[in-house]
Length: 387
Image (tube, rainbow, N blue to C red; front, top):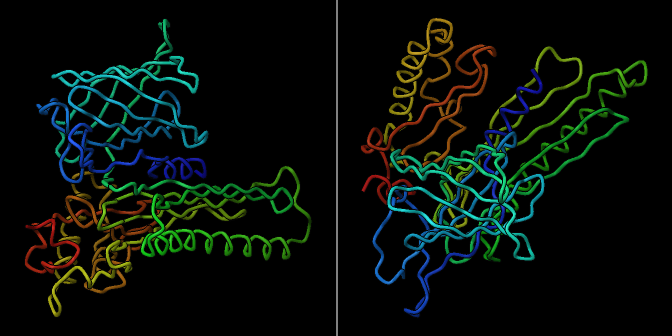
């Protein structure tokens, strides 16, 4: 059960190494690189003179590894970029092509310029939410292949700004615990708003680590006998989901979980940072909606009905108890403390025990912006999504 939680947390994270700077160039002899901030890419746009490029961020898996990150810049039918693995962190250069049907070939090269592998697959833009790339990787002149699968990430930063993942790993064999943390940081700017976001993100995970270590020390002090090698270890696992990262907004969901030795089962819960990069302000839910509007009632009603539909669609064993559901989705601010902003809607997370028992796990509702249009503050952070 603990390992299942570990995989759930890590697979739910967004893993990003350094994205090459994407900026507009004034000289016509250089391609202008623009970030993707709305729709998935068309398969083969006609670009006059090859002067316009688009940058894309993908994350996914290859073979048995789920921490593959790929950054691609596309200029007409040419592709270039890098990919890396979180556990290694070293970027590998990519160069290749994409044809009119979305078939891609990407050759990878090491620091000496020697080719070390090739990705062959299909760029699929049929899903209007996110593009996908799937295919197989192989070494040069080898028949052995590893399947890979990538999904576009909601990142559209420009001017050299980038979102990267930092990691913290610690183990204490005396107190028998392990800590594995991944948290986001903005790089490429010393702007005060960027610095503040980084401090908030780092501070959130640092607080969780400090609390966990204190709890482990207190538990050890209460033990009558010292730990042995046969004792089960405790752990703290923190990952994150990038709901949106643009020049205006950064919306991050943190997945916090772990296990305390002797407990009946693991624990998990969510926290969020929704940040306005223009004003350097942490957003509150009320900042998204018209003053004095009934936005909580609108959100409450939608979530209640959507969770009922989800339960019925998944079968009797997945239906949430009516009493839990009524209480957990009531129009109270405390019920909607875990929310993120996506391109398509406002995503609400209901942690375990809020709308159902532990066995049913956390629940998620994505409220499409049209369902909120009557209460959204047009000049607020969500106004851009309903125009």
